[in-house]
Amino acid sequence: MVLLVEGEPLLAADFLGKLLDRLIPDVEARRQDHEVLDGASATWTEVVDRLRTYSWFGGTRVVEVRDVQRSRDARIEPLLKYLEAPAAGAVLILRADELLSSSKLGKALAGRCETHEFRAPPARELLRWVRAFFKREQLAIAEDAAQRLIEVTEGDLYRLRGELEKLAAAHGGEKGKQIGMPELVELLGDHRAAGVFDLADAILDRRRDQALGLLRRYLRGGGELLPLLGVLQRNVEGALLVARARQRGQPWAAAVSQARLPYPVQARARRWAEQWGMAKLRGALLGLQRIDAELKSGAPQPDLDLAVELLW
Image (tube, rainbow, N blue to C red):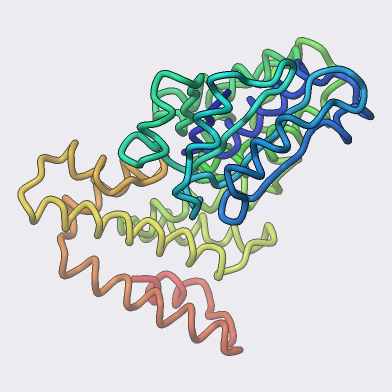
């Protein structure tokens, strides 16, 4: 019996795919011998009955129970009795969003199952994770390009791997090639690869002349104000979370950690929380939300100088 604790679903899905490849390598056999049940509706008696069903192909039979933390069946005795004499060639995979240690089921499973817990890589591990992906593809990536990819996807593993897979597909025939900013610009477009995050930094740091130049480049490259507003709002919201934690007496490191921000936002959030404080950040957020609402209602996009002034 295997328990997957899916704090980071992408990593858990990767592990599950490899596990199923090992347990039931044949694709046709897997269609018949891999059964998925909903933890919220399945009973433990039903789970055990499925485990005791014979394999169609004489191999391993896998019963997967998703969202097991939502199980409403408190009668776990059928499962415990089954575990005393499990069916030969049957594997039970339980999937949960969180550890079950404090629940009745969790206590019953303690010491009886193989547990794998999946968490998002910590900030310092994301660059290593990106490099490892390209190494598996027999490619490499420059550090500035890797960092920019993490920023563009805001550290979200699903979005990040989607962009990594696009780059790998585009350069799959060039073994040993190092992916740099030119390849990134080709994939993402100039306004995404080289503009929006530098522009957000310049605006929020009140570097007006630099902001104007970057905004001109961003808009001429096909960028729009609405996506930029989204980036700015997320950064200001992150800084507000950090500022509130600091107001409650948390040290800076604890405040940033408690805010649970994506890796690329963390350093910015602390910097702006230190620079502006709660009142200015609240005012900035309200201003950004107002501009966002006006643009979505059909208001024309302002000229460059006015845009920078409006954003702050």
